Image (cartoon, rainbow, N blue to C red; front, side):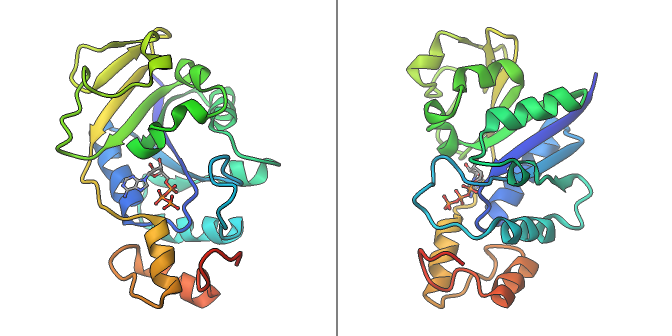
Length: 220
Ligand code: ATP
């Protein structure tokens, strides 16, 4: 069995405790040996949104994960020219490493999966872990799989697991879903409000130092 590695993509504009706690709970529950945080270059779903330059987002993730030996950072999407697509990232890791890959995403991102490039193929490449809010009574039967995916999945034996026709699994993992979003953090900063306890202090200091997000919706 190869090393169990989670791939956690996102805009991370900026990274916050919601991302970090979710990743920590997934790592522990699935006994992952590493989770690689992968900031996106130009996210296909957020083209109209102003996003802090990649170098800032990379640095914020680096600061946020420092001290956690299981968390690492990859600039693969930042280095790849053009828009980032998860399918390319998963293929890259599959081609270059003999790892068991788990792609990690939140339920809000999963709800838009049909807009992702080659989304049907994604599930033939690796396992998926969808982080869900507690208390929504998600289980293998009620989880709203998009209609276009339904035919390709059957409920797995365990609660919270679907099995794809390729043999790969889609897991639903309830996490302590902290109701924090990068959008809210950017809004708070733009309005001069506190963001303390929403993200790691070292990231907060870095944002201040670089003057990020002071004006809402403007490129920094
Ligand atoms: P924005 O507010 O700018 O849309 P975001 O806070 O949703 O940003 P992203 O970088 O877009 O952050 O999210 C990266 C991944 O983390 C996605 O899969 C998303 O579903 C997940 N995620 C976002 N916020 C949380 C949270 N509070 N808890 C757990 N997962 C989250």
